[in-house]
Image 1: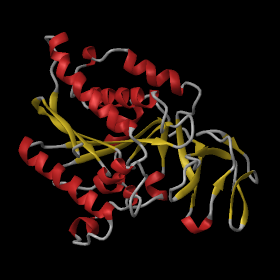
Image 2: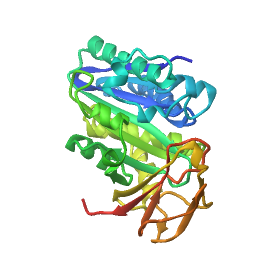
Image 3: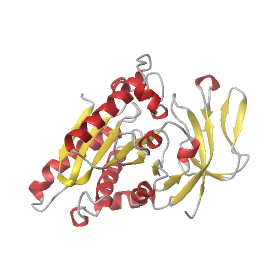
Image 4: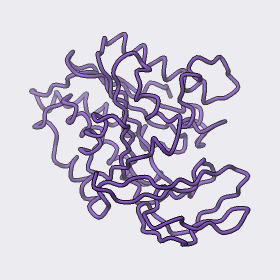
Length: 305
């Protein structure tokens, strides 16, 4: 297994699309989706003589060591470590710092090799609970535009509630060219269709950024996302996050799925201090049903933004 899953070279007028899977080592669906997507791109010109992709695509494994070990992370959650300080650091005692520097260097090298003038970073994730299809844009309007075309609930405010995520990092000019970051959550970790939904999201992202033509995208890639998210809210805003540590011995109450309604005062989890109650009415997001993680759950509320 190599950190670089593969590449596809297209025309010179489009962006560099950076696809990252396995930022958490217990989330293999994104890696598999990238593998299949790159194979689809290779055979598409054979099936469709008029097919043309503007720009270049590179697929990367985020936390390579954690993915090999089939654990969420080795030392620290990689998606809470993205910062300029980590990039410039020589500290090799934290495995995820090494991972970030290696990913960053590959992206820099790819920009130089392709002479790309802009980039889109699509970070593919899954969740430990069901109904986990949603998209998280950065504060940039271009990121929000892509997010709204992925036919999944759009979650706003995450960048304000968390720090040092890939969204925060790639929303600046850290790679030397204008970069648009988007995070897509395609479903539950082990659900086979999470791979299909991640593929659909990648293809819709390429269409929205005009890397591929509208007529070259099959309707099935819209339908697979629309059908799954039809009963979910369109846009929500983060109103509460519940950070945890290993010492908290946090345990989520069973049975919650993403976007389930919760009421103020509802008993939703336990830790060493006793029962944990919902602080207000809303919908639960990313309830933790795995051994490792830094967030027990989030509460979101619907918005018209």
